[in-house]
Image (tube, rainbow, N blue to C red):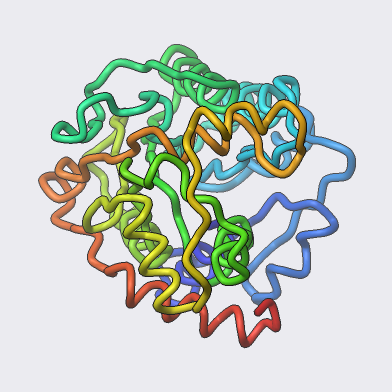
Length: 305
């Protein structure tokens, strides 16, 4: 998300110059001439963040840990909360004009009623370590950030540049994906270009400080339908089906799937972007077949497929 955001901001000139805080491993991802890199070593600290936020107008916090099956609570806590806490102190001292904090709609927990998508005014009901640490980061900003802020909650972002969802495409293509419980629950993927355009409108706006915006794709779809769309574009055999109960038992003796992954595919995750349209006159519009075709093309160019 960060790489795409920086690239488009410079191409479209809604940012004159961008400073990025990156690890040595990720430094080569930002080669533009108008990008200034601040490289950190083993971890962030207050001094690095103070340096990175000095003499800038807007800070976008895209740091976080999604999870890869090996994360423990401390990993999420450090990446999702402690870095946000340090950053809040730094921006308070530097006196920037706006902090844009990228959170997640998963702070609402699973959506119980699929007829009522989650929205910004719903209470925080995190159900796992990732959701909890993202939720307390939001609370910290609300209570402690002294500069204007906006929080955005993008849901399931996919597209060129992403490697996290690549594992899902590969599993479906190879026939290794397990459709749990018939794939009846909803997901709400969001194409990267829709995320970036939403961010552009939020960043250049002067009227929506101290507010929260959800960014979600044009429509939710059931897991089985998403798998079908991926099979149309990427190919692959029909997925293996299994009950949720069986997969919960499998977790105990294999590292190939985790409880959080089962939760992801068996709990409703669908959200309303109505406020985004009402306030910023923008609706995410890239449909899934189109988005997957563009994603596959990019993966092939990069040699990942």
